[in-house]
Length: 229
Image (cartoon, rainbow, N blue to C red; front, side, top):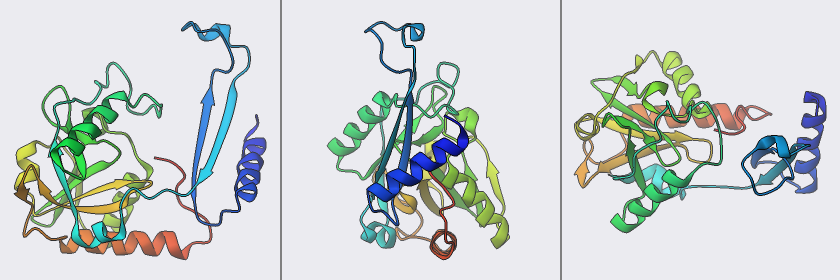
């Protein structure tokens, strides 16, 4: 498919589903083939377009914040699977999500092989300390999320310094604020990690300002600024 063909197919899918505000996911597979692993057995790729509505968290979480718990399941090593690849290989994320459910938490914090924070099961992680924003680098195993990138833009607008550095669990525990980003999650505060309150246990001022600006950007424009992250 050409870019023009793909664009028209996406628009037609949106029309057929009668969506004005929704979530689009594009899937490209190797196509029909046998049960083996050799992609050469699949002659023609398949394109699947999903148009739906999705919301990871209830609106109350944006006012009160999430609780997260560190899980035993580690993020896939970037050397094994490049985090820049957006695939459906979510097994370790699903296992981490189950751990969060069993712990009664809203999300699971996933570490990499070095023991540093990589991301959550479906979100990028940001912490705030002394007025500065920090987030794990892509090399830590985090997906280069589109919403993550928009936070960098917002920080620049607000004059807030933002850095990509390795983050430990301790950094999360002693942070003044914490929030997560993702296409379906947008920007959501975190107020407790492994039973410890983050800051005063309420969404902080920088998080609140970032959420407000993000919503201005996404609600004011006539077209969406992101598709899938």
